[in-house]
Image 1 (cartoon, rainbow, N blue to C red):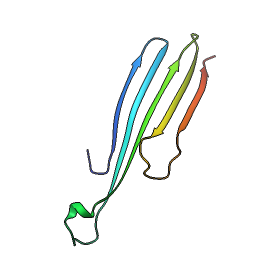
Image 2 (image 1 turned 90 degrees about the vertical axis):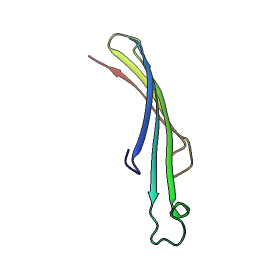
Image 3 (image 1 turned 60 degrees about the vertical axis):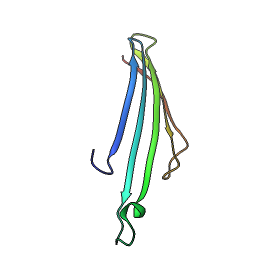
Image 4 (image 1 turned 45 degrees about the horizontal axis):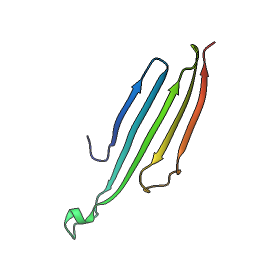
Length: 93
C-alpha cells in the first residue's frame, strides 16, 4: 500500500432476505519536514482519519428492500460529523 493511501477492511453476512455489513475505513496523511534539524521520526506530523461503518439491508417482500447504514468516526482528526446515518426503502415495479 502506498504511503498516505487509504486502508479498507470489510466483512459481512448475507442471507436471502438479510445482509449485514461492517467496514473499517482509514487514511493516514503524513507531511514531510522542510529541513532536517532533528531526526526525521520526530518531525513527522500525522493526521490519521479512522472511521467505522456498519449497516443492514432487509428484503421483507419479493420486490422491496429497506436499508440502514451508519458511519462513525473512531478518532477526532479532521472536521467531520459525529455520525452519518442513511436509511431508505427500495422497490421494483
